[in-house]
Each structure stands twice: as C-alpha cells, then as structure tokens.
Length: 183
Ligand code: CUA
Image (cartoon, rainbow, N blue to C red):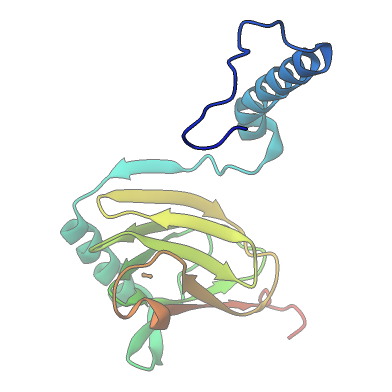
C-alpha cells in the first residue's frame, strides 16, 4: 500500500510509454506555437496597441493636463471639467485617486492623440462597454492615436485596484456625431 509515509516504488528509470512521449512532443510543439504567436500577434493581430511611450514626471503631466483643460474647457460635470478638444489635437487624460480628469467630448470619426497617465498609483483604463484596456502607470505618458467610431456617452471604469475609492473611480467620454451629420 502507498501512502504519505510509504512512497510508491520508484519507476522513473523505466522508459516512458509511447503515448506519454507523444503528449510531451505535442505539448512542446504547442508551446512553440504560442511563443511564436506573441510577436506575430503584436505585428499582425492588431491586439497590442503600438503606442508611443515616454517617461514623464507625474507633476508635469498634471500641469500639462490642467493647461489642456483650461484651453478647451466647455463646461463641468459634477465638478469635473468637460473638455472639447478640436479634431487632430493632443488629448490629455489623467487618473488619480479616485477620478479621471477631464470629461472628454470627442467627435465621431475624428482622430486624436490620446495621452494617458496617472498622478499617483497604478490605475486601469477600461472604456465601457468596449473591450479597451490599458494600464495607467505613473511616470509614463502613454500616447495612443484614437478615432471614435461610435457616438455615445461612455464610461471609463478603473479596473486596477487603487485604494479605498477604487469602485467609484468612473470617468466619462462623450462622442458626438460629426458636425453636419445626423444627430
Ligand atoms: Cu483607479 Cu482603481
């Protein structure tokens, strides 16, 4: 009888069964396929955004964001500035405990350079209800070319635990139909 005190007879020196060898080969082959897919997906799959990345001082990024807010502010939503930058401009969004600043008002079909960064700790940018996810890391300005394809009123949900107010950290992106287009 084998139990925790009495080990089974050692058989590791016996040759592996053909089926076991086959499975080891298959598993190894699959590992190689998945490994090859990592760079392949980056280049061909369109799943990993190849955005710009810079190191940035969180205070400097905050100052840049406030300047951006001052330049294009059009209103306020629950104390958070609403900002409508012109198409083609650089857009700054900052995550901090526990809010997203500012509320962005973008035009459908127009392109923007969206900058993302954090003032304090790691936050998670999740554009609800779309499957768009980014780590928002303090010290890095993450630049991403975006073109809203759908008009609507969307939410930014923080999906990285960032402290006691994590669950209330909800931001907003408003996408308006293109000028002259149907409302
Ligand atoms: Cu920010 Cu969770």
